[in-house]
Amino acid sequence: QVQLVESGGGLVQPGGSLRLSCTSSRGDFSSYAVGWFRQALGREREFVAATRWSGGNPYYADSVKGRFSLSKDRVNGAMYLQMNNLKPEDTAIYYCAVGRPITSTIATSGAYYYWGQGTQVTVSS
Image (cartoon, rainbow, N blue to C red; front, side, top):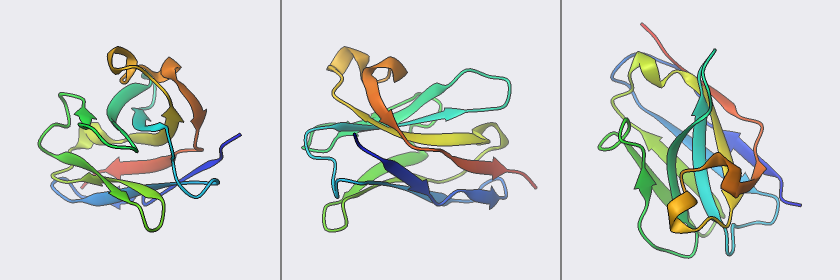
């Protein structure tokens, strides 16, 4: 069992930035891939970004490419999602998840085993 904790959400104006963090009860993410998903009110959960903790290319949804980026803190065992130039349509609950997806399923929520409780991001003026 892996427990995940997200933090860093909040209220920000359009064009602003936030950095979300995800940490694991195991201290790091070892052989897992770490994914970020989001769910807006009344909408289905959607993929945002993911990468394998051991290395490799990150993957981003088209809607966030060029604005969001992933980074790893191997000292503290944290995965960060840096979100820049935020737009009102980025408003959602953001979830961190871990799993061992193959490349073709890395953007699929069903490929992830453990999920955090989510953190609210609201982009509004």
